[in-house]
Length: 124
Image 1 (cartoon, rainbow, N blue to C red):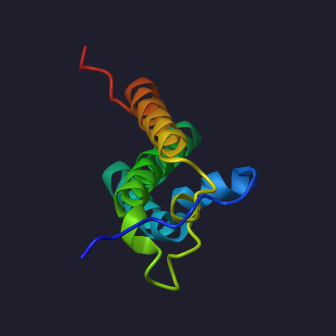
Image 2 (image 1 turned 120 degrees about the horizontal axis):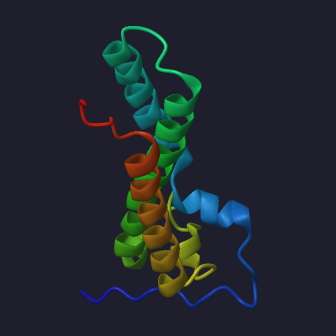
C-alpha cells in the first residue's frame, strides 16, 4: 500500500503559532513538570531563578525539537487520522525543510543554553 501526502496548503503562510504547534506544547508541559520537580529535589529547595529559567526554556526547546522531528517523520501518515491531519507538516503549511531547520535550531540553542547556564562548574 502506497501512502501519498496531501497537496501543500494553497499559498497559506505559517505563523509563529504554527511553529509553536510543531513543538507539541501539551506534551512538553508534562516533561517540564518532571524536570522542574527533579531540579527542586536535587537542590533540596529552590534552585534559583537563573537555573530555573535556563533549564525550563532550554528543556522546552530540546523536547520541542523532538516533537518537530516526530512530525516530520510522521507527516506522510498523519493525514489518515482526524486528530493529526491538520498538523503544519501534514497540511503542507510548513515544509519539511523549514521544519527540519526549525527543529535543528531549537536543538542547537537548547544545547548551548544548557551548556552555558545549567552545567555545574568543576570543583575548584
